[in-house]
Length: 483
Ligand SMILES: [Ca+2]
Image (tube, rainbow, N blue to C red; front, side):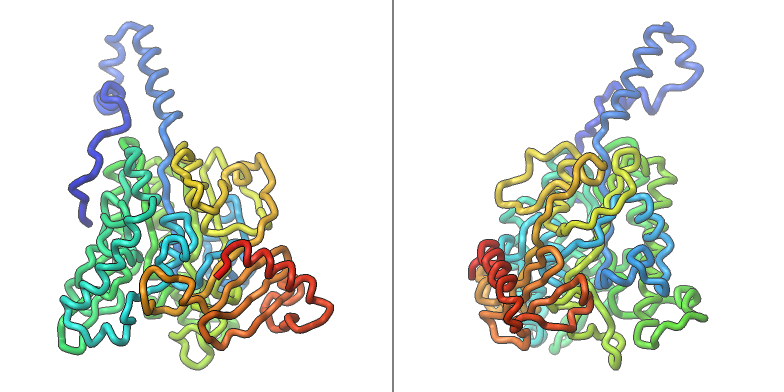
């Protein structure tokens, strides 16, 4: 783990209080006048009570909304996530705007839709296949151009760091070095790691040069091989300085190589073969969530830590090629790609309850800034809302549609999201409309009634009796973003 040289060194805790915390003892206190002791206790207690919460974002990488125990899946083994959900404000109808890693993660970092932050692709021009022909230096340069896009807009870690938070990046991170997005500490360095592997994000070009694929390089071992950087970071800052942990492990993402113990819960269950490796990887991810929550408890910060959970996009294995996503999940406009449960928990503040109105990952940044007392950093460009009033049980969620757009994995040119769009989608209430174009694709104009057809198998788009709904949703979609 590296530490940014421009890290804010200032401790938010006033020096006098900080000294008191670390040097006070029963013997010393007994020599103090009683009034001074009481004053001291009062000041320390007030400081502890008023200290801003730590923030931990836990992100599943490639997991369908329906592959969690708490979302009703009786086969998949997710005891730690289920326990977290039970104690959290639960939003089962959450959406990401685009069903692939980089644009979705950039939305969580910025609170903006991909057409706003501009990072609507995983790979910059000329695209991944063509980039494999480049030398290592050429590849690095091609990626570096888009690494800088995230510096053009406010980001959650940059805002939190400005207000005195230590901000740790681990796992998936597509925006180059962790410092680019504003983290003060991190694992991803935008350079090849020490071995070739998907789980080090390091691969070999056609000419033999090693390159960082771009999805997190050395940071991708978090969860898969170690949790030490997070444990060390929590230990370093717990009770001393507010901290933010970005935990976005390369899990349950392929490669599906979970050790045997993560297959055991499925040994006697009737799980289809194509789901078993994926379910084992989910169990493995779940165990790391348990580790992280235990670490917070062990350092006595679980009470003053806001935990936010979501998936960056959905995934469901192809029935033949088990390591590949099927056509209706990742990169698609269907529920298995776009929908995710969202969990929000701050013990003593939020209430365990389910909120079924639609929410999105665009809401996470305003929510976290609200919980940390920094709502004044929310800009008028950010479309999301603060979910904390609903999470605290103070207010019902407003009824809103969810929107997004589907783009190809590769960008052909930069700063032109509209020319890449394969389809736009809207969910409003029980209905979902998908409108293809302008880029030619196999996506058909579609209208689904998700209340009666959760698997989106019955396309109502051409039915005469549905034309009014299609018109209404088209207007809403055009008002959201006209191409
Ligand atoms: Ca992903």
